[in-house]
Length: 388
Image (cartoon, rainbow, N blue to C red; front, side, top):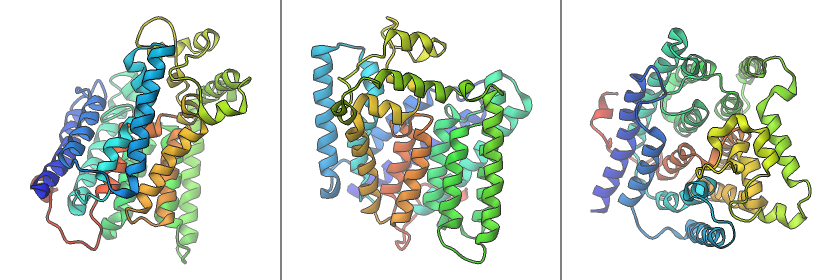
Protein backbone atom coordinates (compact mmCIF):
# COMPACT_ATOMS: atom_id res chain seq x y z
CA UNK A 1 0.00 0.00 0.00
CA UNK A 2 2.81 2.39 0.91
CA UNK A 3 4.65 1.57 -2.34
CA UNK A 4 1.47 2.24 -4.32
CA UNK A 5 1.03 5.64 -2.64
CA UNK A 6 4.67 6.47 -3.38
CA UNK A 7 4.17 5.63 -7.05
CA UNK A 8 1.12 7.88 -7.22
CA UNK A 9 3.04 10.68 -5.53
CA UNK A 10 5.78 10.43 -8.15
CA UNK A 11 3.26 10.33 -10.99
CA UNK A 12 1.48 13.44 -9.74
CA UNK A 13 4.84 15.22 -9.46
CA UNK A 14 6.17 14.26 -12.89
CA UNK A 15 2.93 14.53 -14.86
CA UNK A 16 2.10 17.93 -13.34
CA UNK A 17 5.35 19.47 -14.57
CA UNK A 18 4.95 17.92 -18.00
CA UNK A 19 1.28 18.73 -18.59
CA UNK A 20 1.36 22.26 -17.15
CA UNK A 21 4.52 22.83 -19.18
CA UNK A 22 2.75 21.78 -22.38
CA UNK A 23 -0.02 24.26 -21.61
CA UNK A 24 2.64 26.94 -21.11
CA UNK A 25 4.24 26.08 -24.45
CA UNK A 26 0.95 26.82 -26.19
CA UNK A 27 0.29 30.04 -24.22
CA UNK A 28 1.99 32.60 -26.49
CA UNK A 29 0.58 35.73 -24.85
CA UNK A 30 1.34 34.85 -21.23
CA UNK A 31 3.52 32.62 -19.13
CA UNK A 32 0.83 30.00 -18.80
CA UNK A 33 -2.93 29.88 -19.36
CA UNK A 34 -3.20 28.01 -16.05
CA UNK A 35 -2.54 29.42 -12.55
CA UNK A 36 0.72 27.47 -12.46
CA UNK A 37 2.08 28.73 -9.13
CA UNK A 38 -1.09 27.84 -7.21
CA UNK A 39 -1.30 24.49 -8.99
CA UNK A 40 2.27 23.59 -8.03
CA UNK A 41 1.54 24.46 -4.40
CA UNK A 42 -1.32 21.95 -4.61
CA UNK A 43 1.04 19.44 -6.24
CA UNK A 44 3.48 19.76 -3.32
CA UNK A 45 0.70 19.20 -0.78
CA UNK A 46 -0.88 16.30 -2.69
CA UNK A 47 2.45 14.52 -3.19
CA UNK A 48 3.29 14.96 0.49
CA UNK A 49 -0.17 13.74 1.56
CA UNK A 50 0.21 10.58 -0.54
CA UNK A 51 3.39 9.61 1.33
CA UNK A 52 2.28 10.99 4.71
CA UNK A 53 3.90 9.39 7.73
CA UNK A 54 5.64 10.50 10.91
CA UNK A 55 8.71 12.52 9.83
CA UNK A 56 12.05 10.81 10.38
CA UNK A 57 14.09 11.72 13.41
CA UNK A 58 16.64 13.74 11.41
CA UNK A 59 14.03 16.34 10.43
CA UNK A 60 11.26 16.06 13.02
CA UNK A 61 12.64 19.00 15.01
CA UNK A 62 12.29 21.19 11.91
CA UNK A 63 8.76 19.87 11.34
CA UNK A 64 7.67 20.71 14.88
CA UNK A 65 9.59 23.99 14.97
CA UNK A 66 8.07 25.30 11.73
CA UNK A 67 4.51 24.34 12.75
CA UNK A 68 4.89 26.02 16.15
CA UNK A 69 6.52 29.12 14.68
CA UNK A 70 3.79 29.63 12.08
CA UNK A 71 1.03 28.96 14.61
CA UNK A 72 2.40 31.30 17.29
CA UNK A 73 3.13 34.02 14.71
CA UNK A 74 -0.44 33.82 13.42
CA UNK A 75 -1.86 34.23 16.93
CA UNK A 76 0.43 37.21 17.61
CA UNK A 77 -0.63 38.79 14.34
CA UNK A 78 -4.32 38.42 15.23
CA UNK A 79 -3.77 39.89 18.69
CA UNK A 80 -1.52 42.83 17.88
CA UNK A 81 -1.50 43.59 14.14
CA UNK A 82 -4.47 42.02 12.33
CA UNK A 83 -3.79 41.65 8.62
CA UNK A 84 -5.12 39.85 5.57
CA UNK A 85 -4.60 36.09 5.72
CA UNK A 86 -2.94 36.11 2.28
CA UNK A 87 -0.41 38.70 3.44
CA UNK A 88 0.45 36.36 6.31
CA UNK A 89 0.74 33.37 3.98
CA UNK A 90 3.02 35.36 1.67
CA UNK A 91 5.40 36.23 4.50
CA UNK A 92 5.51 32.74 6.04
CA UNK A 93 5.47 30.48 2.97
CA UNK A 94 9.00 29.18 3.49
CA UNK A 95 8.07 27.93 6.96
CA UNK A 96 4.76 26.51 5.68
CA UNK A 97 6.68 24.47 3.12
CA UNK A 98 8.98 22.83 5.66
CA UNK A 99 6.21 20.63 7.09
CA UNK A 100 5.33 18.84 3.82
CA UNK A 101 9.00 18.79 2.78
CA UNK A 102 9.89 16.79 5.89
CA UNK A 103 7.69 13.97 4.57
CA UNK A 104 9.89 13.57 1.49
CA UNK A 105 13.02 13.02 3.57
CA UNK A 106 14.16 9.43 3.09
CA UNK A 107 10.99 8.55 1.17
CA UNK A 108 12.79 7.15 -1.92
CA UNK A 109 9.73 8.08 -3.94
CA UNK A 110 11.20 9.35 -7.22
CA UNK A 111 12.76 7.16 -9.90
CA UNK A 112 16.00 8.63 -11.22
CA UNK A 113 15.35 7.43 -14.78
CA UNK A 114 11.91 9.07 -14.86
CA UNK A 115 13.33 12.26 -13.35
CA UNK A 116 16.03 12.42 -16.04
CA UNK A 117 13.45 11.98 -18.80
CA UNK A 118 11.34 14.75 -17.28
CA UNK A 119 14.40 17.01 -17.13
CA UNK A 120 15.07 16.48 -20.84
CA UNK A 121 11.43 17.19 -21.69
CA UNK A 122 11.54 20.38 -19.62
CA UNK A 123 14.75 21.62 -21.25
CA UNK A 124 13.15 21.20 -24.68
CA UNK A 125 9.91 22.89 -23.58
CA UNK A 126 11.73 25.81 -21.96
CA UNK A 127 13.98 26.35 -24.98
CA UNK A 128 11.05 26.23 -27.41
CA UNK A 129 8.87 28.63 -25.38
CA UNK A 130 11.66 31.11 -24.70
CA UNK A 131 12.94 31.06 -28.29
CA UNK A 132 9.61 31.68 -30.02
CA UNK A 133 8.59 34.25 -27.39
CA UNK A 134 11.71 36.31 -28.10
CA UNK A 135 11.47 35.80 -31.87
CA UNK A 136 7.78 36.69 -32.23
CA UNK A 137 7.73 39.41 -29.52
CA UNK A 138 3.94 39.16 -29.22
CA UNK A 139 3.78 41.12 -25.95
CA UNK A 140 6.31 43.39 -24.21
CA UNK A 141 6.62 40.96 -21.30
CA UNK A 142 6.96 37.75 -23.30
CA UNK A 143 9.25 39.42 -25.81
CA UNK A 144 11.76 40.42 -23.13
CA UNK A 145 11.27 38.08 -20.13
CA UNK A 146 9.58 34.87 -21.37
CA UNK A 147 8.33 32.18 -19.02
CA UNK A 148 6.88 28.67 -19.28
CA UNK A 149 5.10 28.46 -15.93
CA UNK A 150 5.57 31.79 -14.13
CA UNK A 151 8.09 34.65 -14.06
CA UNK A 152 11.37 33.10 -15.15
CA UNK A 153 13.32 34.14 -12.03
CA UNK A 154 11.39 31.45 -10.16
CA UNK A 155 11.08 28.60 -12.65
CA UNK A 156 14.72 28.72 -13.80
CA UNK A 157 16.01 28.13 -10.28
CA UNK A 158 14.01 24.88 -10.22
CA UNK A 159 15.40 23.88 -13.61
CA UNK A 160 19.00 24.52 -12.52
CA UNK A 161 18.57 22.69 -9.22
CA UNK A 162 17.02 19.73 -11.03
CA UNK A 163 19.89 19.73 -13.54
CA UNK A 164 22.47 19.73 -10.75
CA UNK A 165 20.76 16.92 -8.85
CA UNK A 166 20.62 14.74 -11.97
CA UNK A 167 23.82 15.83 -13.75
CA UNK A 168 25.58 12.48 -13.29
CA UNK A 169 22.58 10.62 -14.73
CA UNK A 170 22.72 12.50 -18.04
CA UNK A 171 25.67 10.47 -19.28
CA UNK A 172 28.03 11.57 -22.04
CA UNK A 173 25.54 14.11 -23.39
CA UNK A 174 25.47 16.07 -20.16
CA UNK A 175 27.53 18.88 -21.73
CA UNK A 176 25.04 19.13 -24.60
CA UNK A 177 22.12 19.45 -22.18
CA UNK A 178 24.09 22.01 -20.19
CA UNK A 179 24.53 24.04 -23.38
CA UNK A 180 20.75 23.93 -23.85
CA UNK A 181 20.34 25.23 -20.30
CA UNK A 182 22.82 28.05 -20.96
CA UNK A 183 20.84 29.02 -24.08
CA UNK A 184 17.61 29.10 -22.07
CA UNK A 185 19.10 31.36 -19.42
CA UNK A 186 20.68 33.58 -22.07
CA UNK A 187 17.23 34.09 -23.60
CA UNK A 188 15.59 34.69 -20.22
CA UNK A 189 17.15 38.08 -19.42
CA UNK A 190 17.19 37.06 -15.74
CA UNK A 191 20.09 38.47 -13.72
CA UNK A 192 19.58 36.23 -10.71
CA UNK A 193 19.50 33.17 -12.98
CA UNK A 194 22.84 34.13 -14.53
CA UNK A 195 24.40 34.31 -11.07
CA UNK A 196 22.89 30.92 -10.24
CA UNK A 197 24.25 29.55 -13.52
CA UNK A 198 27.78 30.55 -12.51
CA UNK A 199 27.35 28.58 -9.28
CA UNK A 200 25.95 25.63 -11.25
CA UNK A 201 28.88 25.77 -13.67
CA UNK A 202 31.28 25.51 -10.75
CA UNK A 203 29.35 22.60 -9.25
CA UNK A 204 29.22 20.68 -12.52
CA UNK A 205 32.66 21.33 -13.98
CA UNK A 206 35.07 22.87 -11.46
CA UNK A 207 34.56 21.01 -8.18
CA UNK A 208 37.36 18.60 -9.11
CA UNK A 209 40.60 19.92 -10.55
CA UNK A 210 41.70 18.06 -13.69
CA UNK A 211 43.53 18.87 -16.91
CA UNK A 212 40.23 20.08 -18.30
CA UNK A 213 39.96 22.79 -15.65
CA UNK A 214 41.69 25.35 -17.89
CA UNK A 215 39.02 24.97 -20.57
CA UNK A 216 36.23 25.03 -18.01
CA UNK A 217 37.66 28.24 -16.58
CA UNK A 218 37.48 29.73 -20.07
CA UNK A 219 33.84 28.70 -20.18
CA UNK A 220 33.26 30.31 -16.80
CA UNK A 221 34.78 33.57 -18.04
CA UNK A 222 32.47 33.44 -21.05
CA UNK A 223 29.47 32.98 -18.77
CA UNK A 224 30.73 35.88 -16.70
CA UNK A 225 30.71 37.99 -19.84
CA UNK A 226 27.09 37.01 -20.47
CA UNK A 227 26.27 37.96 -16.87
CA UNK A 228 27.86 41.40 -17.25
CA UNK A 229 26.02 41.95 -20.54
CA UNK A 230 22.66 41.12 -18.97
CA UNK A 231 23.32 43.36 -15.98
CA UNK A 232 24.26 46.27 -18.25
CA UNK A 233 21.24 45.77 -20.49
CA UNK A 234 18.88 45.58 -17.51
CA UNK A 235 20.32 48.67 -15.77
CA UNK A 236 19.24 51.00 -18.63
CA UNK A 237 22.52 52.89 -18.38
CA UNK A 238 21.41 54.88 -15.33
CA UNK A 239 24.09 53.86 -12.87
CA UNK A 240 23.58 51.88 -9.69
CA UNK A 241 20.54 53.96 -8.70
CA UNK A 242 18.68 52.58 -11.72
CA UNK A 243 19.04 49.01 -10.47
CA UNK A 244 15.83 48.18 -8.64
CA UNK A 245 17.48 45.79 -6.16
CA UNK A 246 19.76 48.61 -4.99
CA UNK A 247 16.69 50.76 -4.30
CA UNK A 248 15.05 47.91 -2.38
CA UNK A 249 18.17 47.58 -0.23
CA UNK A 250 18.14 51.31 0.52
CA UNK A 251 14.50 51.09 1.62
CA UNK A 252 15.42 48.15 3.87
CA UNK A 253 18.34 50.07 5.40
CA UNK A 254 16.00 52.96 6.15
CA UNK A 255 13.49 50.64 7.83
CA UNK A 256 16.02 48.93 10.12
CA UNK A 257 18.33 51.90 10.78
CA UNK A 258 17.16 52.26 14.38
CA UNK A 259 16.61 48.60 15.22
CA UNK A 260 18.20 47.26 18.43
CA UNK A 261 20.47 44.23 18.08
CA UNK A 262 17.85 41.75 19.34
CA UNK A 263 15.48 42.76 16.56
CA UNK A 264 18.03 41.79 13.92
CA UNK A 265 18.12 38.35 15.53
CA UNK A 266 14.37 37.85 15.94
CA UNK A 267 12.84 40.10 13.30
CA UNK A 268 9.86 42.41 13.59
CA UNK A 269 6.45 41.57 15.01
CA UNK A 270 4.46 39.32 12.66
CA UNK A 271 3.19 41.26 9.65
CA UNK A 272 4.76 44.60 10.52
CA UNK A 273 4.11 46.88 7.53
CA UNK A 274 6.78 49.12 6.05
CA UNK A 275 6.52 52.85 6.69
CA UNK A 276 4.18 54.89 4.51
CA UNK A 277 7.22 56.71 3.09
CA UNK A 278 8.79 53.40 1.99
CA UNK A 279 5.52 52.24 0.44
CA UNK A 280 5.17 55.50 -1.47
CA UNK A 281 8.74 55.29 -2.76
CA UNK A 282 7.94 51.80 -4.12
CA UNK A 283 4.48 52.65 -5.45
CA UNK A 284 5.53 51.41 -8.90
CA UNK A 285 5.19 47.90 -7.45
CA UNK A 286 1.62 48.41 -6.26
CA UNK A 287 0.76 44.85 -7.32
CA UNK A 288 2.80 43.75 -4.30
CA UNK A 289 0.90 45.94 -1.84
CA UNK A 290 -1.33 44.38 0.81
CA UNK A 291 -4.17 42.12 -0.31
CA UNK A 292 -6.41 44.20 1.96
CA UNK A 293 -6.17 47.14 -0.48
CA UNK A 294 -5.60 49.68 2.31
CA UNK A 295 -2.35 51.07 0.88
CA UNK A 296 -0.06 49.20 3.25
CA UNK A 297 2.92 47.23 2.00
CA UNK A 298 4.97 44.50 3.63
CA UNK A 299 8.46 43.12 3.21
CA UNK A 300 7.47 41.15 0.08
CA UNK A 301 7.87 44.40 -1.87
CA UNK A 302 11.62 44.31 -1.11
CA UNK A 303 11.90 41.31 -3.49
CA UNK A 304 15.23 39.96 -2.14
CA UNK A 305 14.43 37.10 0.20
CA UNK A 306 17.46 37.85 2.37
CA UNK A 307 16.05 41.31 3.12
CA UNK A 308 12.54 39.96 3.60
CA UNK A 309 13.64 37.15 5.90
CA UNK A 310 15.71 39.39 8.16
CA UNK A 311 12.89 41.94 8.38
CA UNK A 312 10.14 39.41 9.14
CA UNK A 313 11.95 36.53 10.84
CA UNK A 314 15.35 37.84 11.86
CA UNK A 315 18.74 36.29 11.29
CA UNK A 316 17.74 33.28 13.41
CA UNK A 317 14.74 32.61 11.19
CA UNK A 318 16.91 32.74 8.09
CA UNK A 319 19.46 30.40 9.70
CA UNK A 320 16.64 27.99 10.57
CA UNK A 321 15.70 27.72 6.88
CA UNK A 322 19.30 27.30 5.75
CA UNK A 323 20.00 24.72 8.45
CA UNK A 324 16.98 22.70 7.34
CA UNK A 325 18.27 22.53 3.78
CA UNK A 326 21.82 21.67 4.85
CA UNK A 327 20.81 18.90 7.26
CA UNK A 328 18.08 17.45 5.02
CA UNK A 329 20.38 17.28 2.00
CA UNK A 330 23.44 16.04 3.87
CA UNK A 331 21.49 13.25 5.56
CA UNK A 332 19.88 12.38 2.23
CA UNK A 333 23.34 11.32 1.06
CA UNK A 334 24.65 14.42 -0.70
CA UNK A 335 28.29 15.38 -0.23
CA UNK A 336 29.30 18.65 1.46
CA UNK A 337 30.25 20.20 -1.89
CA UNK A 338 26.90 19.16 -3.40
CA UNK A 339 25.06 20.72 -0.47
CA UNK A 340 27.03 23.95 -0.83
CA UNK A 341 26.38 24.17 -4.57
CA UNK A 342 22.66 23.53 -4.02
CA UNK A 343 22.58 26.27 -1.38
CA UNK A 344 24.65 28.55 -3.60
CA UNK A 345 22.08 28.30 -6.38
CA UNK A 346 19.23 28.98 -3.94
CA UNK A 347 21.06 31.87 -2.27
CA UNK A 348 21.91 33.51 -5.59
CA UNK A 349 18.16 33.56 -6.15
CA UNK A 350 17.59 34.96 -2.66
CA UNK A 351 19.66 38.02 -3.56
CA UNK A 352 16.98 39.02 -6.04
CA UNK A 353 13.74 37.10 -5.57
CA UNK A 354 11.92 34.87 -3.12
CA UNK A 355 14.17 31.76 -3.11
CA UNK A 356 13.06 29.61 -0.16
CA UNK A 357 9.67 31.34 -0.24
CA UNK A 358 9.07 29.96 -3.75
CA UNK A 359 7.23 26.70 -4.33
CA UNK A 360 9.69 25.94 -7.14
CA UNK A 361 12.63 25.79 -4.71
CA UNK A 362 10.53 23.61 -2.40
CA UNK A 363 9.68 21.24 -5.25
CA UNK A 364 13.37 20.98 -6.16
CA UNK A 365 14.18 20.22 -2.53
CA UNK A 366 11.39 17.61 -2.42
CA UNK A 367 12.90 15.96 -5.50
CA UNK A 368 16.40 16.02 -4.02
CA UNK A 369 15.27 14.43 -0.75
CA UNK A 370 12.84 11.94 -2.29
CA UNK A 371 15.09 10.78 -5.14
CA UNK A 372 16.31 7.21 -5.06
CA UNK A 373 20.06 6.86 -4.79
CA UNK A 374 22.05 6.01 -7.95
CA UNK A 375 23.04 2.49 -6.81
CA UNK A 376 19.43 1.42 -6.52
CA UNK A 377 17.65 -0.30 -9.39
CA UNK A 378 14.11 0.81 -9.85
CA UNK A 379 11.37 0.81 -12.50
CA UNK A 380 10.14 3.98 -14.17
CA UNK A 381 7.27 5.71 -12.43
CA UNK A 382 5.46 6.67 -15.59
CA UNK A 383 4.97 4.91 -18.89
CA UNK A 384 4.84 8.27 -20.62
CA UNK A 385 8.38 9.04 -19.52
CA UNK A 386 9.68 5.76 -20.98
CA UNK A 387 9.40 7.24 -24.45
CA UNK A 388 10.88 10.61 -23.47
